[in-house]
Amino acid sequence: MLGLALAIVSGTGAARNLWFAVSGATAEGVVVRQLEELAVDWRAELPGPLGKAQLGIQTAAAERVYRAVVDFQADGKSYEVVASARAAVHLYPLGSKVEVVFPPGRPERARLRPELPDSWVQAGLLLVATVVGAGSGYTWWKLALWRRARRRVVKPAG
Image (tube, rainbow, N blue to C red; front, side):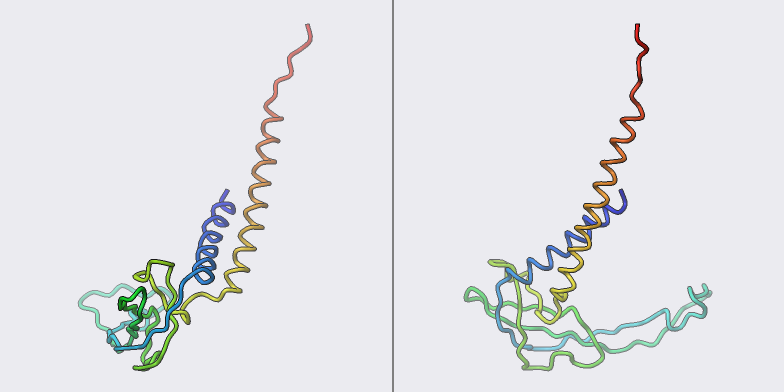
């Protein structure tokens, strides 16, 4: 049952990503600004594999990271999409052009093409999920038939 549930969840996600990449409308966007954030890795300061609880105020060094804001045009209106990827350097320099993908008629749900999952990996994941799901479903069905056959009560003749 767990294999079937895992196959359904991963297969659904892979199918959704593939469908988005293939059927999505595209537009060319331009990086208009960079969002600056502070990121902290608390695990770097804690000793041991899981860290050790310490009393008092905890501090950790912060690092400046940047995320690009891309402006694009769709249906005669201007939209902005913020990159998911963030790094200590500008992954998308100001003024650079980036391809944007969005569901047809829904430009507010846009994503940057370079940040989409690889299509071949998603297709492979979908294939594996299908095989695992079919195998789990077949095994579950055969087990149900076997249990039903064992529950049959044979009535004595007469």
